Length: 334
Image 1 (cartoon, one colour):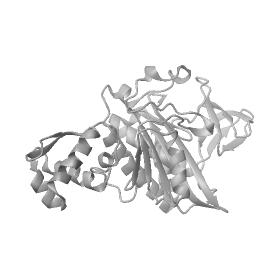
Image 2 (cartoon, rainbow, N blue to C red):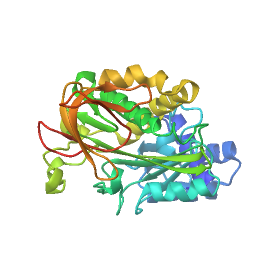
Image 3 (tube, rainbow, N blue to C red):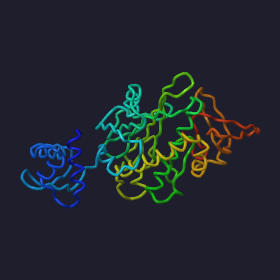
Image 4 (cartoon, one colour):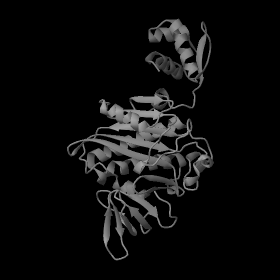
C-alpha cells in the first residue's frame, strides 16, 4: 500500500468513532479531496469498511483480518523489529523471500509476512502446513554480532519468545512448554515451527533469517493426518478466535526484548527463561544427529551454550548441539 492510503487510514483511525470530512483529511495530508476519495477506495478494495462518500465525512468501521503492515504496525511498540514489513498474500516460503532480502542488504529487523505459504519449511527439511488467512507466517532479517559457533542459541531465543507470547495469549503459562530446541507446545501439542538460516563471512554471522510459523486460528482437524494428533492451534486451546495482528505485535515486541538480551549477554541472559519452560528433564529420548547416528538417553538438562545434555544407560554424558529428538513416551519425532 502506498504512503498516502496509509496516511488516510491513520487519519481515520485517529478520529475513532467520529467522521472526518474529505476536506479535513485533504487539508491535513496536503492532497486533494479527489485523492482522498481515491485512497479511501483503495482501502475499501483491500477489505477496510469505511462509511461515507465524496462530499461527506468518512469513518472507519472495521479493518480486515489481514496482516497488512498497517495492521501490524498500528500500536507496535518495538524500536527496530517490524518497522519495515513486506506483506505477501501468498508465497512459497517467507524464509526464501527474507533470505533474498538479506542478501540484498535488508536492514536488521526487516520482516516478511505472508497470509499463506505453498512450500513452508521447518527444521531438518520438513514441510510446515501453511493454510491461508488463519495463522502467522513471518520471517525476520537479523544482523547480530555473533560467531557462527554462537548462532545456534538464536533459535533457543526465538523459542522462548514464541513460548512467552503464546503463554500471554492463553493467560496460563503452565500449559506452555518448550521441547528442545524450538518446539513450543500447548498442553503437550505443537503449536509453532521455527527455522533459522544464516549467511556467514568466515567465522562471523553476516545475517540470520528467523522464520516463525504459529498456528493461530487453523482447525486442528484440517492438519495432515500424520501429525493431526500432535499439533494444535491457539484458537483450539482457548476456545476463541485469535486476533492475528495483535498476536503478531505481541510476538514482535517479545522477540525484540529477548533478542536484545541475547545480543547483550548471550545465552546466559535467556537461559533462566528457557529453563523455566523446558519440561524435558528426566525424559527418555532418542536423538538422531545430522549424520544419522542415534543416541539413546535420559535428558539431564541444558548446557551453558544451549546444548541438550543426556545421560546414557552406561553412565556416559552426551552433549547434543543439533539433532532430531524423539520422546520415548510417544515415539513421535520432533
